[in-house]
Image (tube, rainbow, N blue to C red; front, side, top):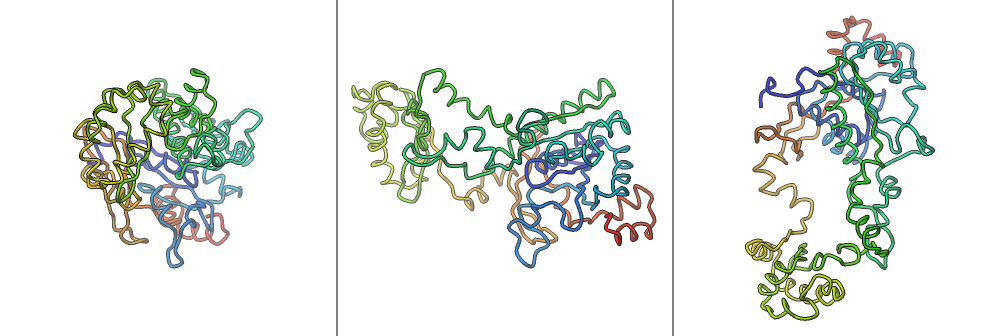
Length: 401
């Protein structure tokens, strides 16, 4: 897809975000063509640069996965000169995105109230754990904390075990998707009105829709034991569980009566489809331990791929429980361009997931790899803000940039 076909190729974004929640949203803006300038504090920049970093690397792969399609500058926003330089950039920007703790930008005199006076067309987007208002607004928030406070942890794990967090940073990514959608809506509104606006999301609130099934079982059916491993709450949907194969695990969903009978036939036990213990969903729920035992005895005699092929051919829902390397090398994802490999200038050959958003069926291609810290100081401060080489060197020596 050429640059001229990208939806946001006339949009400039000042990206003050760090770690995952904000950077993923701004990376997606970059995939849509926006000019994203990542503004990082000297001397270390975004804290995720140091995460999972090998000693010889300037930054780790986690940073690289979240920051394609961006330029990087360093700027000390706690200094008067740094704030003035930022304001000069704001005057020419379309979007400012930040995910500092609530009130941080106001303390630096760079909140929305100040910036919109400099640029009435500015879209100011902010993401925090609990939002800009309410009694918890100042509490610190990272993904595991958000999983705890949204009920996700209480709903994850075995019934007899402790609550568990999801293995991935799901709330950060959910929050990023909500932040992106708000920014896009604000751009659309500005196209119609000529005025910018503030976009705010709370990561906690962004995660609440994930509770939909559990809320249905708790409030709709009065069930109270909601943590039940890979099963549905209270086993209402049965069978729905992970089952052992000879070489790993598979997830099988065959809860409706039609698929249950198909599964029974595939297992060579068609009589179970009409067995009084299992013939209806409510009965299977009551006898879910026996259902799982029967299925597990069958699945453990076959490989994951054999199960996948057999069940999919019969329209019984099944998925191989894949390990990380299997996901990254998945030929389906590779053919769609969802996961690719790049030769990164600082990290060498590395896998990279692209944007799930596609237009006219075209896969996204990263336009540039993640940048080194401050790699674009000269071009942004020099060519775009008009500072001389001597002025840039002076700012660098005084740690303004």
